[in-house]
Amino acid sequence: MAAGDIGIWRQSTGGTAFDSTTYTNFPFNTEVRADGDLAGRDDNTGVQLPVGRFLLIYNIAMNTLSGSNRSERNFRVYLNGSALSGIHGGSSLYIRRSGSADEDCASGAVIFDNDTADHKVEIRVAITDDQSSNSSGVFANSCGKSIVQLDSSWPFASYTGAATQAINTSHSFVEQTLQSTDEESGGISRSGNDISLNADKWYLCCWSQEYQSGSQRQAGIGRALLDGTEIPGSRVYGYARNSNSVNDPVGSAAFIFKTPSGSFSRPYINV
Image 1 (cartoon, rainbow, N blue to C red):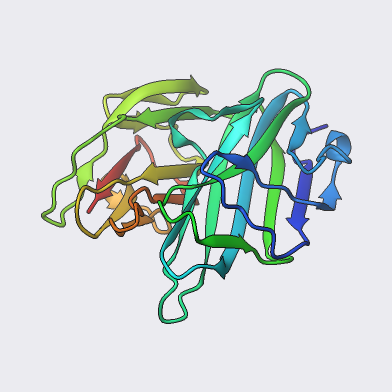
Image 2: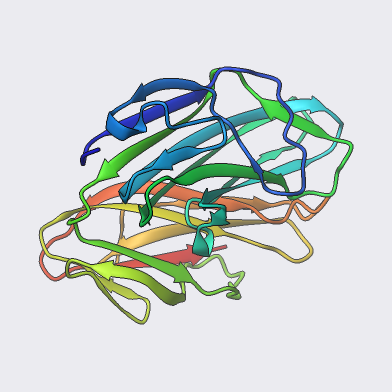
């Protein structure tokens, strides 16, 4: 397998319910394209990968099968049976079940390294509401995932935000606290919450942000800044209803941007 090889899969069967409170594998049962070592490597429980760096992109559409109240589904990316740290690649969806608001979709993206051959990458889903009588399922031919092998020599960095961070309610953006550096290479470095990048280069950024709220409806919006200016297409959004335990939304985004000379990229969050 070489940099630029692609794998694409979709879920061609509709109506399957995913109603477990335990994170459960979300299968993709139809191979659309699979280059090199990716061919035939998805057994409906994930894709066995060679050693390398990969970009995973997915979109999952679900609708109500039964019930009359709110549903929340959270999605996580697992590698070799363990969730990626720091909610990397996570996403969520919310089904209201009122006013014909009976469907939603979740999209996520993540760049990650696989250090051991045949480790399996998979997407898992779990109920994060308290309405066990509700049931939600998938649309046929509307759910897909794609994997691209990246060049491992390219500059790469991964960071995890603080486990908890209080956000003000004045509707102004505040700086997100970066808690740890998972990986850095190729001239990328972090100082506090500032990420220093190489000048005059194109970058792909994948970002997932979880929001939680206490006792009332809240919407969280996040954005990324480059030298103090918002990067177009970088915003993420999460809505916490705070009814029926619908209070764990995850916003996610993937975007490409170019740095001028001496740039910093600074993630911000907002409610």
